[in-house]
Image 1 (tube, rainbow, N blue to C red):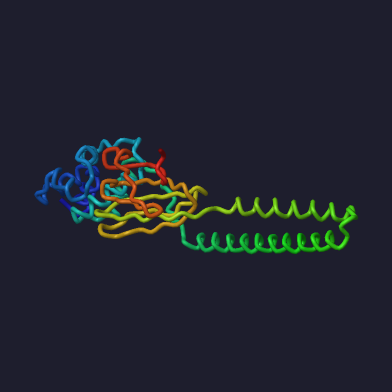
Image 2 (tube, rainbow, N blue to C red; image 1 turned 90 degrees about the horizontal axis):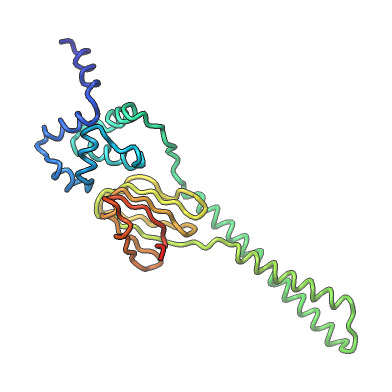
Length: 249
């Protein structure tokens, strides 16, 4: 048989059969793979049987398959390409949130703080001037005094409104005991984290709360929010989890 025919034959083997054959060649059982990758045995069997549930987020599935291929020392790009062809995957945007947005947010906050401070100074100066004028002419109430009071009230209301509109930044620390796919979106619908974090690493996030957190290996993640470690066990389904931080009570 020619090399071309051999290559065509390999390409015609399904994703699941290639992974299954490579696992058996490596003398690994489903349980062995589950223990290393922290992917449920049901999910591993579905992958090898070419019967992946279409309801599962493709980002989760791709993360599982990529980790599986790496464990079996297969070409990850070829395996992911085969997955895309076999399941007619719609290519998802790979836009990662850059940390430049945080700098822009901080710059915006600094401008608001400066404007608020200027308003307060203007209010104080106006009130001092009004008090001085009133004490100098105690028996006369002029229309200009009334106008000054109204303007001062408007300045105070405007200052309070701008202060209340400023977004409050929150901090969360993620610690990973195993490799884990993660996606985090803040209250402004900005994706502030996306990808696979390695075992033994941490991830410090800052953004506008609440955060929407997707985890591919939730049992391997601990989260500290505002100095308090969160209990996410009730949100874990199989090995994945989807929840808000702060946790809903």
